[in-house]
Image (cartoon, rainbow, N blue to C red):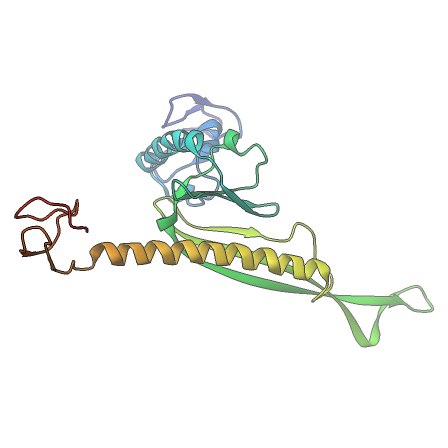
Length: 240
């Protein structure tokens, strides 16, 4: 096949325009289909056509979750984290009209961790000498800047982390107002996500814990209550 031969999307079948092809491991993907993939997905070139079709089916089903999602808590800055505490679900997006971009809705139980990296950058300041040339100060002087980068680790079939920058603008002063505000945002996001992760793990442990035997106050039998809290002998409700 020639370089400029017409290509067709192996997912939807549409013709792919010039410069519109997105290569897959075993085929081609059009720009429209690629735009429907999760924004946190980064392994497209090593994905097969069948794997992309599976993800697009997941993304289509996600639209129903988005429609039913009702935020009860919001934290963050440019990247916002929305929580639906009633459904025990959450999502992360930069879009102000977030329903229109079909953000991935995840369960609380899919959070596996959260890490923060504060990246420091150093830039040397220079002066002009008598000839107008830029030269270093003696001793050298530097200007520093800081970025707060958050990584949320998740258990999702199509991506394992959500990475974003906490601060919207470059932070020039360590310990200054902007630095402290970014640190506070990062601490709030991390604390909230770790709280829901720990709560979900505790719930799983409690659910799997062996149930203790109790004496039925109605018939006197020593039993392990059924799932609905009833006595297996007399059927009376004695608790779970």
